[in-house]
Amino acid sequence: MLGSILKIFTLLLVLSLTSSVYAQNGAGTWPKSALIEATELLEDLRILSADSMQGREASRAGMQKARDYIKRRFHESGILPLGSTYEQEFRIVQRDKTETLKGVNFIGFIKGAKRPDKYIVITAHYDHLGVRKGKIYNGADDNASGTASLFAIAKAINKEKLENSVIFIAFDAEETASQGSKYFVANLPVKKESIGLNINVDMVSRNTKGELWVAGAYANPFLRPTLEEAQKVARVKLMIGHDDPKEGREYDWTFQSDQESFHAAKIPWIYFGVEDHKDYHKPTDDFVNIMPEFYVHAVETVLLTARLFDKELSVE
Image (cartoon, rainbow, N blue to C red; front, side, top):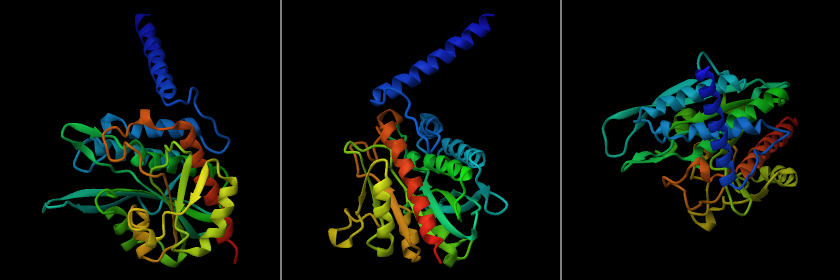
């Protein structure tokens, strides 16, 4: 009897603490969505950015916890292995060190309803900065937010298949010169010409102005009309830009995340992200500081944009 009471008390305490977190974020209630599983999305983000993951850095024991979680959520979201396993292993070269670390990309797919041999590749990196001077860099926005979005988008696409197949990739080692995505592009599991578009998602869970940026139209102007259509249905204020080299490298995001590897291979790409905030690459990039409603709407926008491009790429 006492054990049952303790279990109930523990459950109520957890629910209370969770509600408190959302209240601190200004959400008040859990955001809802008709397009994605919003509660699962936020819970995935919370777990991936927990202290137990030790900042999701390859040299830390917590990284294996993160990898085990991603593998399980790929399976639960209906993503099938593209081959015999989800894992694509490679070696991470460390700066100023001769020793390399094991890197793992997670790769899977959902088969297209009409064009199964043509692909949209949706990507996000799951690694972050680890522990520095005793402080854990949890990387809630960068980039647990993008990683968690993969599961939510996959689950939605499984309910209503796209015409093209969709490859989902959680990249390792983005924080160390995008080594995971570079390895993937150098060892493609499908023909390069069968990939119509890469959609990269990196930092999408907070912006005080309600702005989500999408880059890529400068390098691939044919993408702009579809992105302008996406602006009309976006659940956030969708901004097109941050991709013109004339504005300088800081403003031009072409080489600031894993889309750079696709760009180098001349594979069309778009990149969803927010402008840097005060917690970027700091130990304060925690779950408590995300904006749940904005985050849910941002992921909905990525999904809606993927559906628009699926239709566009299917036109012969």
